[in-house]
Length: 130
Image (cartoon, rainbow, N blue to C red; front, side, top):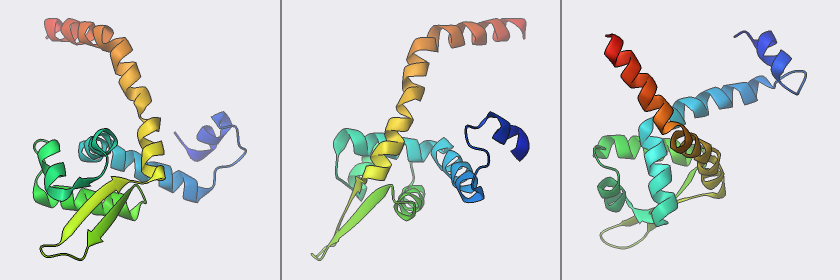
């Protein structure tokens, strides 16, 4: 879809290219399963330490958890708090911005719950044709 086509369906006459770029970046970020899983765990458990998050998010490597948390912190979705103790204590929690993004994606869970049977039926039909 080209920008003019997109703008024709948008309530605003033109979209700020910075907003368009942010939406594209955020879709790419949240489409990443790790970001969504971390958002969910922080929403469910509140403030978490790195090791707790690595336990709560099955299958994530330390490197991927570090990269994802840094990206989320850069975007203002999580707050990283370092306590000056030995060994260092680092905690992560959602910011208001992170919570609002999580709420925006709640609709996906509702949609999945309402349409699970239809998706399973479509997949079965497709697989049976194979």
